[in-house]
Image (cartoon, rainbow, N blue to C red; front, side, top):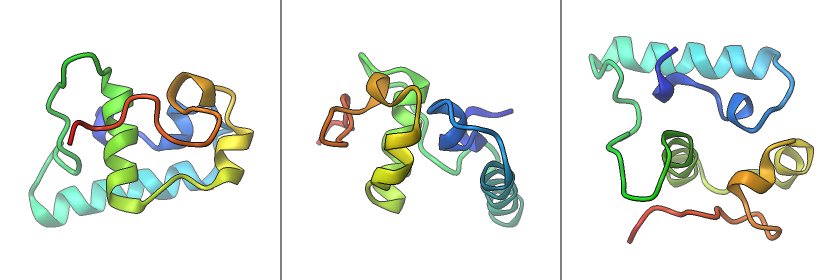
Length: 93
């Protein structure tokens, strides 16, 4: 799966289910309708950031902060988020 299509739940280690399927379907539909294949998010590599960090930051940029309920349940939250729920590595200004 293209990194830009991967649901945030996958990166955060949450249980697979309908939200992941819905995210993937929505992302694929966006790409098919717009012709922006592989470009739902600007995934240009940034110094010191992994593709997962960039994708989560781009999702937050588009959709707003991640809900506390998702972060609380996410096994990998400490890898990407501080205790207050902010990204450890935000996009450069």
